[in-house]
Length: 372
Image 1: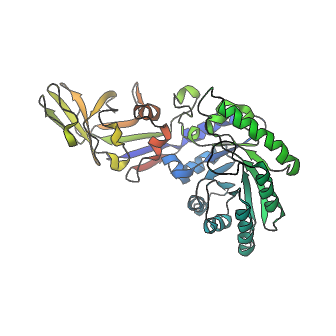
Image 2: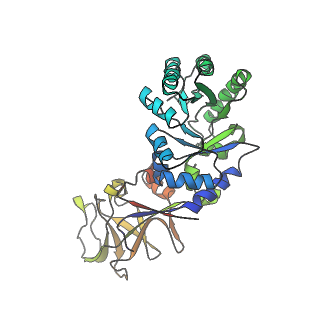
C-alpha cells in the first residue's frame, strides 16, 4: 500500500542491538534502555517491549508522563525518570511507580513527604554532576547529605548513584576521562556508606568507549536504535539501523532550462530535465535545511533533492531521461539495492546529530512496527 509518509521500525533490529550492547558489558553489568522522546522517534511502547525481549533489565525516560504511558501499556520492569521534576510530577512518578532522581535536600524532603502521603515507597537515585553542567549537584558533600535524607526516610529507598558524560562521543578527548575519574573517586566514598546502591554513568558512546565506565549498569539510547554513538557508521560498529523512512512519487513533470521548483526559486534547471514531487516535508519533520542538500532513493538510485523543502512536499531531479513513474516508492532513510542513506549521512549534511533526525519526525509520519 502506498503511503505519503511512513517510518518502518524493525523491532528485531532493536533486539539484536541490545544483544550487541550486552556483548560489550562485563560481569553482571545491567542494561538500561532509554526510551524517552517516543524512543528517539521510534515508538516508546513497542521499542520498550523489543528492548526487554533483547535483554534489557531497566528502562529510562525523561518525564513522568512518559513513565505513566509505559506503565499504562503494561511495561513492568524497573523504570527511571531521569529529568528534573516538579513536586507534583515527582509524586505521580512515585505512584506510577517509577524511580526518580534527587540532588537537592529540599527536593528529597518533599519526596519523603509525598511518599508518606501517597502510602508508597519512593525509589530514589542521587545525581552527582561530574561535569555535564546541567542537573545534579557538583558538591560531593551535598550528594552524600541528600543520600542520607533518602536513606533515613521511612517511605523512601536509596536505589542508585548516577552521573552523565558530556563528551563520551568525542573519541580521544581528555574531558571524558576527567569526568570518569572524578565520578569513580566519589563512588568509592559513596559505597563505603551505601554499598548496595546501583551505580550507573555510561551512555551509548561511553559504553563502547571505556569498560571502566560501565559500573553496575549502563544507560543506552542511540545505539539501541542502530544509530552510531560516534556519528560515523552504525553498521561498522555491529549495530543495525531500526528505522527507515518512506514516501512515494506523487508526480513527474518535465522542466525546461531555467524553470524552477519550490518556494523562493532556490533551484532552477540548468538543462531540460524531469522532476519528481514527493509528498513529504518539514511538516513531517523532514528538515528545511535539506533544501538542495540531500538525496532520495527511487528504484535503487540516488537522486538529488532540489528546490526548497516545503511543509508538505519536496522535489528531486531525475535527469533528462528517466523511467520513474508516479506511485514509485521513495526512500529518504534506509537502503534500496546497493544504495543506503543513513541518519548519520543526513545529520552530517546539516551539522547535527543522527538522533535529532529521528526524534524530529513528526506524528504525521505513521510508524509501522514489524515483529522479529
